[in-house]
Length: 309
Image (cartoon, rainbow, N blue to C red):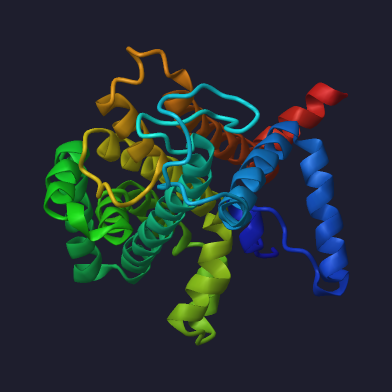
């Protein structure tokens, strides 16, 4: 009886043969995007904001400069109006995009790496190391995340973006680590993993070649939702004044708008754009996650194929 390949166990997409080359993989990616309108929409939204974060600051003036009248509405000169001190809201929004996305993606990368090391490493090795790491994960999970984030952020307020990234990363890895540990405990007893062990494969190679491909869907999904969590957490902390005022982010824009009573004065152009950007980025990432689930989950693929017949 033949041994099932790793990609067949948990429904991961089969790997593209090396002979297909880069062009074949690009064609497959385009086909999958066409088959998943939700994912295509999400990719377009996130690509727009990523390009805005990279190139946008090159085309706007200093966001801290006083360039116009106070609380001027949108016009041909100031597309999104001005703030209480006459600063260009559009310039602030564009520059804030870079720092906001940097916090979200950097915190998600760190949290995902920690989750991989603790979840997969502990689950595969087992023994006392796994018990200790699992205990640490459970302790982090039972501590209320929001109070912990607020307390740590209050002490690290003046350090710029790095403390904010650190605070969010250390409070968002435990959930993914627990899921990955459970999946790894199931996978390590599979026939193909046992065969690799018997053949003398090194531990790191078994994890990279046999374990990780089967967990790719869970890893990507956890990463995406960690980005969403990081952006929302950063915005929330900034809104209550726990982010350095020298750092321009969407959350800080909302904080200054609220402090200067933009809502009561009717200056909607000051607080609506950053709030809308946060909502759009969250929506785009969620759509990408739904699209990936459709592609990588065999049950959804079969259900979709059955409906189309």
